[in-house]
Amino acid sequence: MLEESLQPGWLSEEVKTGTTIIAVEFEGGVVIGSDSRVSAGAAVVNRVMNKLSVLHDKIYCALSGSAADAQTMAEAVNYQLDVHSMEVGEDPLVRSAATLVKSISYKYKEELSAHLIVAGWDRRGGGQVYVTLEGLLCRQPFAIGGSGSSYIYGFVDAEYRKGMSRKESQEFVVNALALAMGRDGSSGGVAYVVTIDQTGAEEKCVLGNELPTFFDE
Amino acid sequence: PPHWSPGTTIMAVEFDGGVVMGADSRTTTGAYIANRVTDKLTPIHERIFCCRSGSAADTQAIADSVTYQLGFHSIELDEPPQVQTAANLFKEMCYRYREELMAGIIVAGWDKRRGGQVYTVPVGGMMTRQPVSVGGSGSTYIYGYVDSNYRTGMSREECLQFTAKALSLAMERDGSSGGVVRLAVISEQGVDRQVILGNQLPRFSAA
Image (cartoon, rainbow over all chains, first blue to last red; front, top):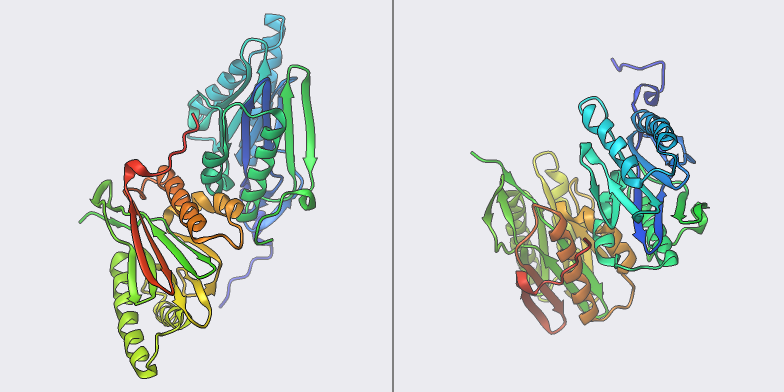
């Protein structure tokens, strides 16, 4: 006898942002990017979700892993950072934001399963990218994360060069996202790209048909 | 007994006039590297080779069986066998015994009918021809690199560089792949094998 459920399978699956996220430093700022697919098992429950969350005016974070965990962490840090910047009386440092994210990740590492990459610009250090996986805090020239990132390690290792310009960094991010979205079933949709520098944050959305294509497409 | 782990990176590319095949050389049992100079490029016939990934025992047994069948078939035909025939023989075996086997194989070679060809027979037993194919645990890390850097109409030299670079990138990221890079070029002239030692590999450093 076949057992049939009255509800579709995806209603009982955890909602994950199986994802590709990437952030890279350039001279004078950072570029941070993500795909837009949110999946529950095999179903795509949101195909246009913006996974780049604002932590402050010039500090963003990219969400991956469990959608609920990641969003909650970002909201909590956004609040804490607002309070902190009011106390200090000036814009917070990117490192401060990353440290707040790390504190939550580390303290609740057994309960949470989300990975946030923090990137932004501040007066003291310029453009910075921080990795907070599993509660560590590490600054890197560029960082990738999410399920789709496995497929682009080779690409980013080969293509990244120090001292890329703003435009080159944006192209690097869009190419990396397009490649990962082509191979990872849990990544897809559109590409959101945010460029942060001294003047502020510029948000851009690259639609599916505007993404770069490769030899077999 | 320690679990024998089939970590690997294998790759094959078609070019006009032949194929380039490559593989890493690491075999691990847990964290111990049982063989750091393994040869994962196995001859099946004079101008047909296969790259093996998955269980070494399974892939060796399958390769031996296909080598036998192909040799017999070639004598009956009285001419060199087609690469497609070899690929089909692999597929037959891998599909029929799919429940018992754990084998991911890339078959590549040259024949006078279709020139250089690459066929992939992944776990499960499907078979398809691809201009470029990667396999093994390390292959996940280089899909992006291969997709963005492969172009049709590359020369023999360009294919060699492309394969060596891709394998180096995978070996740098995958703990189960490493050692030296073994390359083989198969064309009408025959088979040309090369080894690139660890310190001669192209290096990529980001941080």
